[in-house]
Image (cartoon, rainbow, N blue to C red):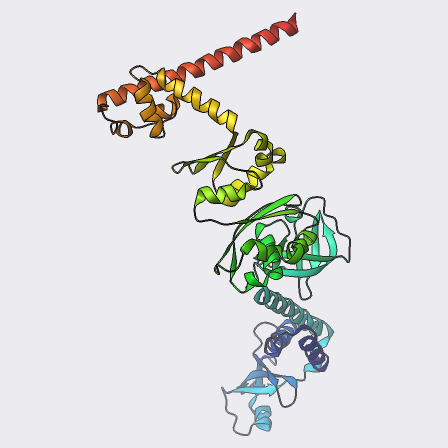
Length: 433
């Protein structure tokens, strides 16, 4: 039995690459478990691997006594002295056991322990191999499907590509090559669970890093990436070398580099935009190809109002709002895109609302406007300390203006609610009639 097990250990060591020390410890534990299963837990023994003989040795320890009452745990003085002439009463004598006497059931138990330890060792080896590879791109072969998830063979391990991490409308069959991003690694009792993704923005970044030497060399940096997987993506790039155009480097000769990424992503359109430390300029770049006329920045709310020519409003917003949505994710700013006509109309209406506040004339309205308070609603949200900086505005007057603005805004809301109710009543009456 032991010889067979050792042959198995050698084969596992070669095939699986598991440390032989771990395998030998498993074998020693297995044999110990087999002996105790056959003779009982109180059986005293020592199991060790004899490297010279290439075999497992089992020594049973028995107490030397005058009269034997338990043959499993005791040996007579007379028998003990045939093995060791210096034996005395009370000594613990170690005797080599014939492992062939363990029997078929005990041998099976030993093999089970070995296989369990082997699985644990394999799990540990896989975890050690992949724990520092999070964020890498790996290649695998589609092995099977589990409730929509794709199980891929990565060679030494299996990985899961969950449904939510798959690009919409992308299909695979068993045996297909799969390229994905290691999104997460979770240790589980049944083995490490390697989670893959093809939808993560970092997958896009990693693909460009593989295709663009300037990125892997650290000359060009991908500052941010945003995607709507399978449809469109934007990446912002910057260069540490003023002589290297980051956008050109990512596009490649005749678009070869970006096309390689597009092909891997099954035709996903990719906008490569230059990053800029100035948020307003960065937003203008991100909204390309639309032309930007004006950007109004609201630092407190981290939002921007972007004004574009009337004929470019749909281009800036994009199909179903996709362009502005991706630009917002890329820049981490809330963006509100308006046409020049809409913007000018809003400005006029905002200015008129200032004039409707008691005590506000054209001069004061213009002053407020220049300070960024472009409507009665802006005044309603202001603090008195913001308004007293204006010449001639006391704290008392500032409080009064704010309250007047609040009343005005509430009045507008009330009129809107009333108009909506009347409209609903009219529709209801028409239906009933």
